[in-house]
Each structure stands twice: as structure tokens, then as C-alpha cells.
Amino acid sequence: MSITNQLRKKRKEKNLAVADIADQLGIARSTYYRYEQGVIENMSSSTLMALSEILDTTPQELLGWKSEPVISVENSAEFLTSAEYEELHQFLLYLLYRRTLVR
Image (cartoon, rainbow, N blue to C red; front, side, top):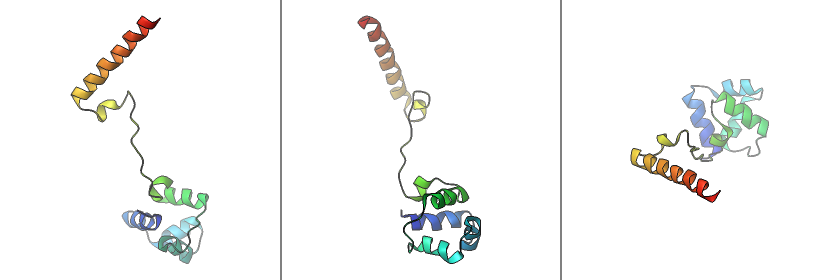
């Protein structure tokens, strides 16, 4: 999804008018409207950051970048079935055991 679509979608989700966002950014309504229409394509990073704060999102999401979930040992159970989690646990035990053999 393009930034223009994201801006419009997020603004409507928060029930904000173009004027509301323009006022918070300290810019003319027409300038913000041109951001949403894609007329202005070279948005500054400070404007992008301010918009992400106003719209309760991240710059990455506004730009349409996909973010992959971060999987760690601590949260791996959220992403794995119980069988996969047990297999991972057994593999970690094996790695620790193998480490003792190498020393």
C-alpha cells in the first residue's frame, strides 16, 4: 500500500480531518492534502516522523514496508506449535551437550 493510501486510511481510522493533521503539523491544509494525493513526493523525514506520531503508527508502516516478527528464545512459544517448541528445546539441549564435548 502506498504512503498516500496509508495516510488517508490512518487519518480516517482516527476520525481526523485534513485540517486537524495540517494544524498539528503546522502546515497549510492544501499542503497536507497534496501529501495524501501524492502530488508532493519528497516528504521530509521530520514530517514523516511527525505524521507517524499523529497517526499512532510507524514511519515504516506509512511507507508500506513489511515488518517481520522478531522471534527470540523468550517469545518463540508464540510462533511455534507445542511439538515444534519441544523439538527446539531438545535441539538447544543437544547444542549445550555438544559444547561440553568440544571442551
